[in-house]
Image 1 (cartoon, rainbow, N blue to C red):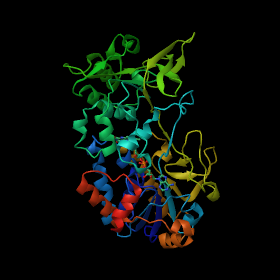
Image 2: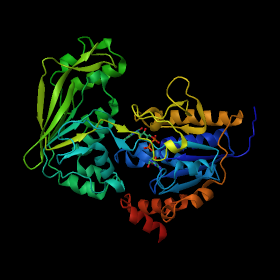
Image 3: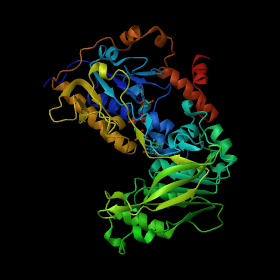
Image 4: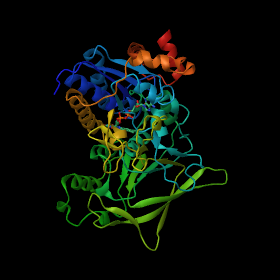
Length: 464
Ligand code: FAD
């Protein structure tokens, strides 16, 4: 094995936790790694900045760790406000580096494909709502009108659904101290939301949420928990037969929320699959209809499946606002096929083995020299930052061990200088936001105590 093979020049595509943790670990394991990190937004950190809820600031502490990359690695460059695939085609990138790490996350939404989903006003992707309260520039105008809403239905029971419910149920004055967008705070202060129901197609034991998030909802002031109606069918007669985590969740559901006066209520409904969003003549949402499911084969196993009850039974819930919160989805970036990269459209992932991209998911798929992936695009859009970190470390270790053991890599040269020269004139006209520029934006945001939610304004602040 060659221990020192000279500088390893890598392009990291996407600056979320996957990109940063891969880069940090690679530099730690092989200090002669030179990182150029490309990011479509002018700002780094991906969903840590634009996904994680504003009332969970402690989750965002990883940003400080990420920022140390600029000191650990003198050759680190952040190249923000450039979109890979459109501003920079992959063949150009390939000609400029030894390795390319795809860590661009999941930029799309999964859909239900049922009537009313795309045609009715007030059926909102949770993704848009989350982007809106987090000042994501592309979601600036996507907030719902809350002054005409009393009943909310959230379809899906992951952590994101619970975040959405918590934001809707919290006292707006408790959110003012966070960096939530001004627009969201204003709309929330006009909110007339009274009841929120979080509906899942399977049972309590199959939940994709963390117990901590349920506890937080239970602890909200002046908010009551309505236990699921059919709770006795969702739990075994003897709770001690359940794994610890599920047992605690069941106990929490039985115990309910804190006592005291109640202004709003929330609940979780299980074993229901949505079949339609129903509107009035003017195209406004009025209710959501669900089909009842049974769980098979064992309703208390984590991997039980939801199957329709025969003959079909339906339930209709009143709602003037509904969220679709059934998950994110990765897609191939433009120009993917030009470099012969595979993509598994069924799972929304890139075929790989320990982060090394394989020519195919089928047996006999071969490693593609110099191409790696990490994060949600590698293993699918599930899991918290800690799980993304573990999988990014796994990718970095594969990368470094391939490099030091003399495996073939890309033979590109020239890095960002070369890439810039090869870009179209139009793409070159965009203002690239480098790390020092981001620092200026960050400084201004700290001063204001809020994020800047317009792209133009961010760029103006940089150039002032
Ligand atoms: P991302 O964080 O999405 O990063 C991908 C980056 O790539 C983005 O910056 C994107 O702009 C960029 N990109 C995309 N396309 C391109 C392109 N063509 N060119 C250049 N750049 C591109 N985890 C927790 O631990 N705690 C929480 O409280 C929590 N809350 C969450 C709330 C929400 C709403 C969501 C969706 C997730 C939450 N998570 C939370 C999970 C956590 O955010 C993910 O595990 C993690 O962000 C995944 O990292 P990633 O780097 O793969 O993707």
